[in-house]
Length: 272
Image (cartoon, rainbow, N blue to C red; front, side, top):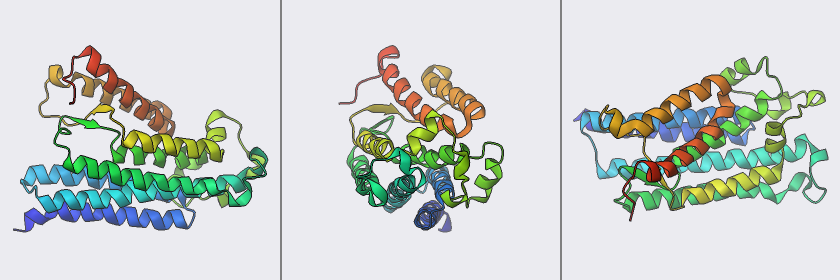
């Protein structure tokens, strides 16, 4: 039947979005690349929903989903980190050491992300414990936080006009007016190759960590059984409305903190 192939077709759209994002990243269109991660994440959510709705779960679907995720949520965010560090060295040379120069090898640290993403997905596929909760940061969450980096960075240059540039998706460092460089914490973080490289390493380690994190899967609408998820979703909406792109890394930090608190406050059974 055709319906059994629908979830896999949606998964292929996830993979296609990842491939297009890599092309954008190679050509320096980091905002467009970040947008492709968001598109891939939407397809990743929809394919699972479609599989459950159509009762079309299959072993090949599970494997195809992981292969697509390695590209969209592993290789693509790794390319964004690579390009960000490459551009950062050129954007603000006064903030970098002479030893880094324009040929900084730190940019290659971005590729630890696809390596650890592949390890994370391989572990997930053979781990029967990860149904109610995840063990380690999920690859889509990791990719989305990395996608927020160029969005946050470029929003600091033109705070009054950046929205239409994001919609267009073709905003590159060449479009920046370097005579009006902002001076705030976000700009300093994302134009410092050591900070970006350090974040990439930490995020990669979180992927394969033993940290238990709750899954955003609602088996019922019960408040008692889903109170942590409901509270988290309300906070996410509020943060996105108030802070926009800057909310994304804060949301991931909140996700980790609330998952840890859930174990203590709501007596969640430990993962063995």
